[in-house]
Length: 290
Image (cartoon, rainbow, N blue to C red; front, top):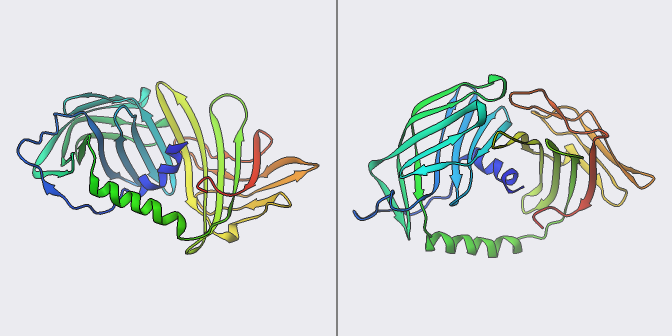
């Protein structure tokens, strides 16, 4: 479930600053298959992000509104600087990238270019909750390679961060039984350098028409809205908007019970119930990042 963990990072559409140098004339972004393309824009109340990370990975279309998100993942097809992808019956993408003069940069063997995607990008979403018809959009195109300077900084942060503070926390998870679609609820809480840090995520996971679709919401949560006692096997969850309602975890006669009125909005669909008998739930000490 790596994609779920990446959703919040995608929402910020931000990255650490890097030192860039202009690429020499011999650097051509069409010489190597791209490992990353991305662009984002606002359309009415929606933030739309399109990106692909890693050779052979899937292209992701992320739509966000008022804290609710929908992520559509599909297999792209590249021909030179052109990329094509289909989003089932909801739309398609056929764009060609042209780098802007003076906007091609190099870090190690990575070549990154800023420029313009032109062509056709159409998408409507389930029940036409959004209507995209894009023919020109500014974005980025990055080729394969490695950046020794960035790698060093990342490894240094990886060594320092875990030792910065002793953390202990809790994870509450609930998921539906049976075949897809799969409905999930995950809440984590821990104490770190800056006090309590909590996250709650509720999503429906689907596979259809060659797509992997994740719809729901993920937000930070305060200690007053997520209370638990691991030893007694009890927890209460009452996240803020866009979630509504609350849910309670308990172990009656040793059997986990997850009940309540907790719901999450679904773009292009009805609010999704995240508690009840159709869920299997458990509460444990620690977090997925311990």
